[in-house]
Image 1 (cartoon, rainbow, N blue to C red):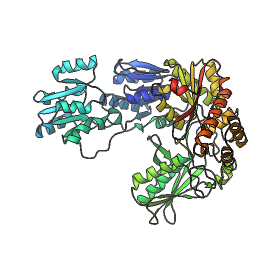
Image 2 (cartoon, one colour; image 1 turned 30 degrees about the vertical axis):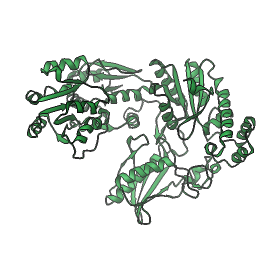
Image 3 (cartoon, rainbow, N blue to C red; image 1 turned 120 degrees about the vertical axis):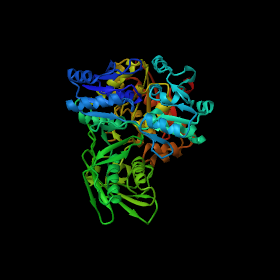
Image 4 (cartoon, rainbow, N blue to C red; image 1 turned 180 degrees about the vertical axis):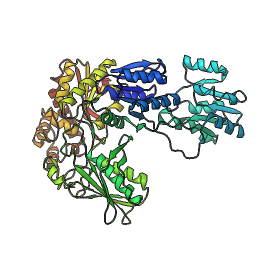
Length: 607
């Protein structure tokens, strides 16, 4: 069993991740007023003393604790640290992102230090953005100087302010987006805040004061227990839970070849810049912005630079590259000033257009390139860098893929749009879809938006911001099995987002669209074009296709409308029979994330 301590934005994210397992867990908050959306979580309210926490963890057989509480809940953090250390229980800290300390803000380690610095300034009118719990410790200042405190508009907050004796005519209630208006109205001599991080809107809070040249004082966040293990987002959380509580998630996630190559690149560059120092874990930045750590197996010097090796772990997805060794050699060069990618052993070479990559260059897709560029430029902002990716088993592995049909020769591609591998090819994955739909329905959703992966899901979330995030479920390649499961769960409305590569396969009746099982059928696209009344120019374009997405830019507007509407209709015909009792809508998404064609054809205008 897992025990979460929360009550903040981070706690809600943790619940969302753990709910994907379909297993029970406990969620502890100090008060009972926070609104939480949990399906499998059991709410525990009330502050826990050392003995109460120890007893609860022991009696409920807690194997893992996740601390997602506010960074300034110092007493709680201390208690968690002491109890878990005594019992030998691991702790994951779901940490916020914090702004870099640049010197623009005056740092204070305590309220006493802050008061002393305010008196020295001196400050005659203070705007406090530190919350209601700081009214009492700051009383020695506000009892002598005009001060305004912004607090939450809640009864318990008002009770605390009243108990401290603070004048209510100097209370300001929090309203989102009103930082500038509040600053202009109060016109303070100084602003104080806590180091609350991105989810605490730290930068937004202090922006008006910094722009006006008004001093900002910040209480720095307290230190956390030494044995905490840190994660900074949902991917890192799930990986940590998989490691520390292996039986909690029935299905394990992994990382893409792009993420693995990025980890090797980061380790090689670090050694190059730090006299050969070898990292055992390399920090990379996922496309979502989350930082995660991947293991590195080897770092060694080469003739001109350093190279490192990382191993691709696909989790429970039976990908052909699972456990493949991926090397990255990094060399600094004066031949150019940018970042150049070179083809190493086992990495494919691009020979056909349509992939968005240079003909003759290495088959390293755009997102992995961006990931490697990001970690390089963070450590080495300027100057020429050559990156050579190698996969010793790449040539052999390429024979198990359809790369040759795409004009990728001599090896495999470095791919991945999210940086994460979700297992899309097992019974456990299909079971996880059922759990996700259960969560959405339990939260009162009447609409489920199914989509192929991270890229299309991002687009669809932007198109339907009114829907809860639990309504968005990835089907991977298993369209047929997903729809069949939705049918048994009586989902009122199903929106299916699909991109063109999968759409041309689905239109032909392929309910499993994985490239290992089915590839784009040009003859079928010709047949669709004929039925749609497309021109001869359209057929000529189809003859030369490498990837279906080339149709977006290659067809005339008239041919594009005719063909895409026919494809959408065929997708609906293939899918609707599997969900006869649901209202099904098809949404065809282009490469820029726009919903371009739908079934019904007037779907967008009727919303």
